[in-house]
Length: 145
Image: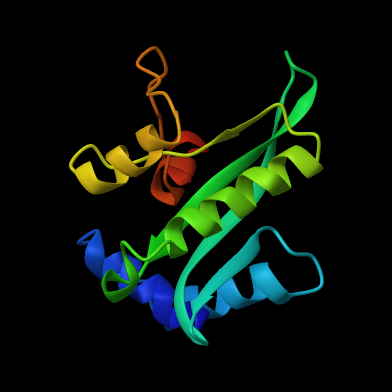
């Protein structure tokens, strides 16, 4: 069920979905003996409507954890029915319960519905921070391999 939802997000974002090996790693990293992230599911009338994946990062200046929202996705058929808002509110509640100083995530710049959704809750765009990324290929290059 969770993997089907993740594949749905990949399709929506026009990204390459996780292959079979990546799907196995996802299951291990969510449900294995040393979880790296947490999965949250939302249901509407007993049917899986969406999911979120979260993990904690840390702010050295606040000296508090941050709840990082890696993914949040609601199936198109369930949008506008309150599932996304309920899931997002539950994550905010969890951030507060954990004593987090903030909650953060990234949004694709073309995803206007998502931007509007988050702004509805009062989330602010951070223009002064630029997301940077290294890939495994970069690791090898940097390490001279």
